[in-house]
Image (cartoon, rainbow, N blue to C red):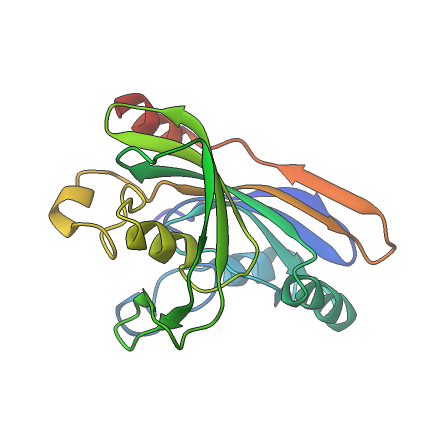
Length: 216
């Protein structure tokens, strides 16, 4: 199997900013995916040891940050924990969302099945969305997450009846299987580096994402 192609957007002694393709794990998995290649391993081969500061789902694409030293790991992990990283995602959601913008403020809790559900005793989770385009059966959104829960965007959009297109875990499996990928792309990241300098990155959606958009 060919090595999945990824792009290094920025390389410094303290961090790597990488544009991950859909279908590539961020880090090692268990079970059926245990033997699959993962971005951490590929980066290790090229750059030496790297540290995970946040994650992207296997079938999502886009920008992700890795630290290169223990000090940088503490700093950048802290930025995500204290919500000092501005994160925007390009998402194609099923159906037509009412209004031009909105937010989903619902607590989330992970289940043993790997799914995440909206439950009263879950962790506080806030997702904001803005409409970019409307298609016949889908809406393209700019989504920002204030919190960073597992599957937050996917679970939140599913909870309001608009699952992410290509999401067979939350949407109707047979229907979503018609699409070649999950339509979720980490589009923009903004944060301050260890020297306090503002950093801003933007990654256009890849060809497989655009191909699905053109077919909606």
